[in-house]
Picture 1 (cartoon, helix red, strand yellow):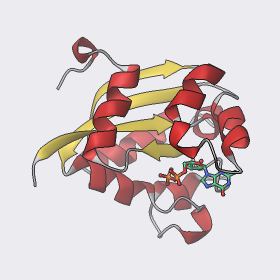
Picture 2 (tube, rainbow, N blue to C red):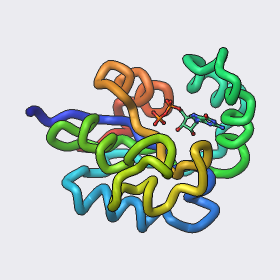
Picture 3 (cartoon, protein in one colour):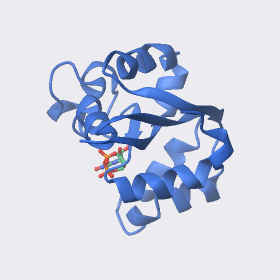
Length: 140
Ligand code: GDP
């Protein structure tokens, strides 16, 4: 295992319920370090590009509508095996299937409003980080 970085989003359902600090504490307790973070309101174009891989899926418009419905917190997390670790802490996409103790089990409202996004590979993490952050924004 090596130290790596992943990209994370605290979604609008999380910011609406003021859960930014609560969820960040779960990351930090699990050895992930927040090395960059900013609160933004995504534009429709930004969300459509970010989720472009899902463009053909039936839920695409709903997902873009949800992700632009309120502020989000975009983050870069760093740690040992950060991509897999973050996915493990998040839990399954559908909170009904998420394991006990995972963020989605504890906080998600639905399969769509599931509180957090996390990159699914180191390669996608690098692309997603570069979409929202300049190298100089990240302080390890
Ligand atoms: P993730 O990697 O666990 O976030 O899951 P995916 O990459 O498959 O999906 C991206 C996001 O689309 C999820 O986190 C959900 O917010 C949303 N999503 C996934 N499946 C569905 C679905 O069946 N219906 C709706 N409305 N949203 C979904």
